[in-house]
Structures are given as C-alpha cells and as structure tokens.
Length: 303
Image (cartoon, rainbow, N blue to C red):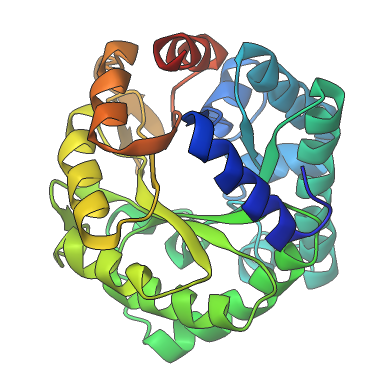
C-alpha cells in the first residue's frame, strides 16, 4: 500500500488492528503443479528468470483467492546461488527487483494489499535441504555478510516490508536482526521449527526473544512446518514478544531433498485457522504445497 517500506509496514499494522490478514500460499510447488520446471537448483527463481508471467499469474490468483499479502519469488535468489548455477551477480540483482515488481503489479491490479519481499535463509542457496537443518557452519559475521547486499536491494525495491522466512538457526536469526538494524525497511521474522525448537535445537523462545528487542521487526512467527506445530509456536511467539504473529505452515507433507519430491498426505485443515487466530496469529497463510484454494479457505475461516 505504501511506496516506501516503512510506510507500507505502518499501513499493514493499521490493517492488523481491525482484522487478521491473509498471507498467500506456496509458490514453487504451485508453479510445479502448473507445469513449470522447478527441479533445478534455482527452484522457483528459474521460473522468475524464464517465465515471469507464470509468477505474475500465481500472485494474481492468490489475491483473487483472498490474500492480503503477496510474498515475492526472491526466496531462492542470491548472488552465490546464481554463481553456483553459472549465472552472474548482476542477473541476481535484477531478479530481486523483478520479483518485487511482479508482486506489486498483481497487488495494484487487485486494488489493495501488501508486498513482502522474501529473504530466504543461506541454506536455501545450496539447494540441498540445508534450510531444514541449519548445518551451514557459518558464523554470525559470515551470515551477516552473505545477507547484507540482498537485504539492502530488497529494502530499496519498493516492497512494503521484507519477509525474513524459513530461518533454521539462532545464528542466522541474530545475523539478520543485526542487518535489519542498518536497513531502511521493516520485516516479519519467521523461523522453521522442529516442535518448540529451531531446526538447530535452540528454543523458539530464544529466537523470538532476540526479535522482541528489534524495532525493525513488526511480526514474528513460523512457516514451512507441519500445521500441527503452529498452535504451540503461536503461543510462544505471542508470550515472548507481544508482537503480531505470522503463521504459514506447509500442507503437512515432507520434502525429500535427495529425490526432490514430496511425500505423505496433505494434512492442511483450514479449520485450524480459527485456533491460531484465537491464540494470537494476525497474519495467516500457507507455505509449500498449499494452493489458492487453501488460501480461499483461510480467508473464509478468518472472515
């Protein structure tokens, strides 16, 4: 809604004061279901490069389903990830900007809403499932250096805020909070949990406690986790920070990074949404393997 990140974050907070907001759903898995090839290491970023109209169509469909917030297709875009794929840094920077332009176009066509520029974890750039393990062995300083330029490009992109998402370790939480202090944008911080802990074993409360002290963080929560883990995490986030809580789980299926396939049965039940809302979740959506139909069901449950 705003032309500047800070103004957009203020408008989003004003919107939360009157009702819960709906975050969009899975992007890479939706693109795959529509025939895009996301098997390469760049995942949905490959589609961003080659078929930007498919990204735009996905954003349009989520807004039409009732989403208030579009999360951009920048999750897998980084200079180091592009280098591993034989592409250069300049192209990575262009794709960061393109991801926001496409989401903003869909938002403007819808007539309302917000754009959250996705900041995925370092592990996503390795395309080996590391974001679900947090075993990158990088120091806080090294993680800060890796995130520095990308965060600032997205901070200057015109997005309303950044979605720092799927963060697996306390080290990376700390690194990103330090980098946010020097960026002209606010953010939500969403970790990927293993029960009531991060993937690296630290308590969720420790991660949320760090975020509680940051005035750059407007909301905290979890994403890309089984739906049954959300309720406890929402309670922890709310009690530790007092900030609005964001929750966007996956379908309940499990990703096999070796075979690059999903296994199990979808356990996503939009009926859970009311319990998450009652526990304090103010931004609710879906992650991997959720679709516009799921987002429509969430919007109906929150209405």
